[in-house]
View 1 (cartoon, rainbow, N blue to C red):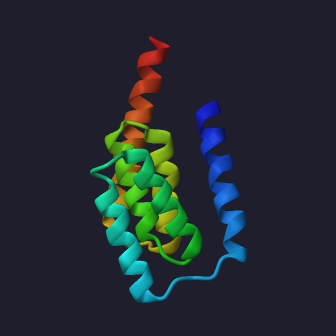
View 2 (view 1 turned 90 degrees about the horizontal axis):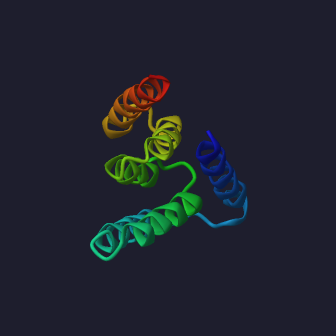
Length: 118
């Protein structure tokens, strides 16, 4: 619960900064996404920070959020993954990765909660 609040606060902070940043051109967006994907080999946290920056600069695009959702899901940080998937789907309702992360992540959170109750 607390970690979800921290994630939501981070998302709100990122979204609050969106109004003051100039959006990228399509070419700049593609170049930034390619660079962030290459950064994944160097470090997950660095790549997520880059995807968050790209998301901030391109508030109408869901793709950076989709990458964050997948990364956090793979790390088994399901709360963060679900939040990022929701951000993706608010921009691109057809994103299959985000739909999958939200569904499976939700099931994993539910299974963890049931296990905790036992």
